[in-house]
Length: 264
Image 1 (tube, rainbow, N blue to C red):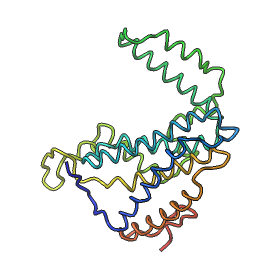
Image 2: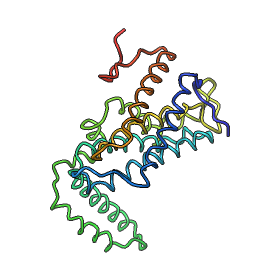
Image 3: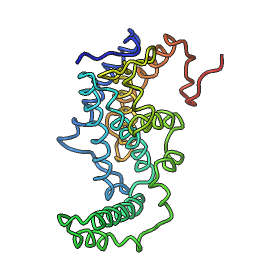
Image 4: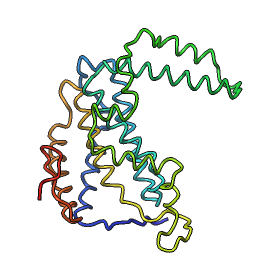
């Protein structure tokens, strides 16, 4: 299937591609030897690594789907990338302090899965094993004051960017059974039912934007942040590319010091 895009890949928009290629090389470059974690991040290192790698591999998955003409169906992956970017900001800001919240959330989810499996009569699920997980976590002994941060919207308010919410809500609408998820396969002009989605957006800009965000957050977990010069260079070029794309689209430039659109 050949991808059909709803907007042209202009010369300005195409400049996201080399930035994305550079970003994709950065985290694997640490595979030989990771730098030293901050003292307050050593216990949470596995979470940070997993969340960063989930962002990177999800980006690669989105690109593969895009190349195959399935970018519309990648909405759950895009939603996950947005969620993991915010989670990386959270862990970069709070370090090991997030562990109690994550542990309590894991215990709560294990309880819900166990109850659901028991109600469904799934003999294949070892209920004793689930109880053992919850006992080991001992959620009642852990701090509960940040349990609200288990909800994405609360985490976004505390550590995210207000510009992430519109995109996140759009991906939720596409990922769940809804008008949005259905209308993608209908011709809007004559209501003809389609056998593939209408033209979608080229996924490279989304992937470059969110992988840059993820890596900028992730590098803060180390005593000596890796890729400082590389990310600084990419960030400068990213802002230039974004402003050029916005100009092509008839939009005003962004004041990057505040994240707000410049006044006319």
